[in-house]
Amino acid sequence: MKQEQIILLRGVMPSGKNSIPKMAVLCQHLEEAGFEHVRTYIQSGNILLLSDLPKELLSQRIHDLIKERIGADLAALVFLPEELQAWVDSLPFADDLDPSRIFFTMTMACPTADRLQALAEKTWNEEAALHLTERCAYIYSPKGYKNTRLTNNALERYLGVTCTTRNLNTIRRLLSLSQGE
Image 1 (cartoon, rainbow, N blue to C red):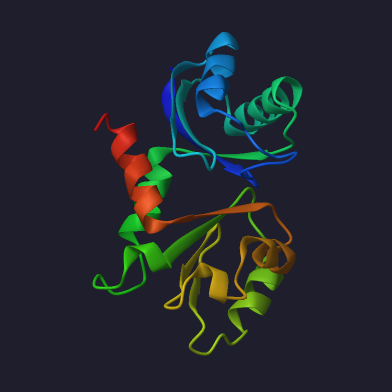
Image 2: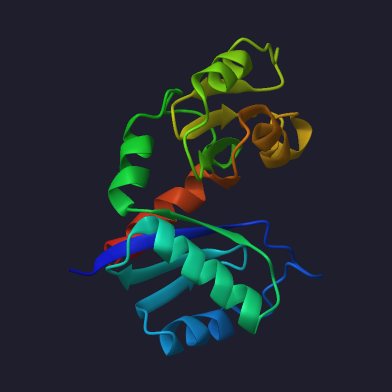
């Protein structure tokens, strides 16, 4: 049975080799490949669609399709809406914080316990608050994401797995879209 899937592309750039000039073109390619109810949200690589493929296969198919038809080499991280909702429901920060300063860095695979522990032991001072789970790092950066050392690339180095980052507002909007709102 086909289920709603949320695909987050890692590393979409506004221009250059990993750009997707028009999300409408990406939707068309995905529909031509047989995917149904394809939608995108903003230009940074957020896709919603229906699929009955296992996550790993769906991820690989989308990666390959984008590389073949658009030329961008982008990892495609696949999540069920229920997974994202569970992370939002488990948000470890106060409700009154600016949601544009709260970030979710989601992993393609589970990092090792040693890597999670090593990252958890680091100190970030006032720069950011970090809370780790097996597949999601929650980051609160009061001065903004660009002013923290907890970037997506840094977390990939620390954790040893492919990651992608979205702010709380984007995650909430993707969940709304997945519910037809």
